[in-house]
Length: 109
Picture 1: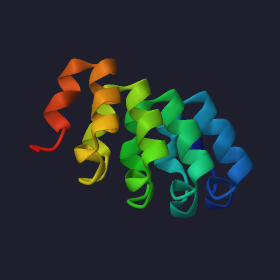
Picture 2 (picture 1 turned 30 degrees about the vertical axis):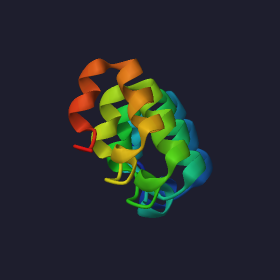
Picture 3 (picture 1 turned 90 degrees about the vertical axis):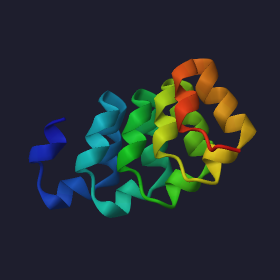
């Protein structure tokens, strides 16, 4: 979480941010917008802390591989998935297998 106090240059350095999110996925909150849209960085973050998905770019919140990794770590990460993926049977199943209460974030359909 020390990334919060890093310079903007370091928050935009992929190697530094990858190390930070692998240590604590929540550090994604302090990464540059460019790296919040980097699939490798976001995957590393959500594999450590599924709900760190909240800090990912909208584009990656619509990436099925990223969402599956997030909900397999923490079913409640489904809350931050795109509407399209909240309606995807495989994604919802993975989320509820992790935590049944995640069903509250699935689409009505």
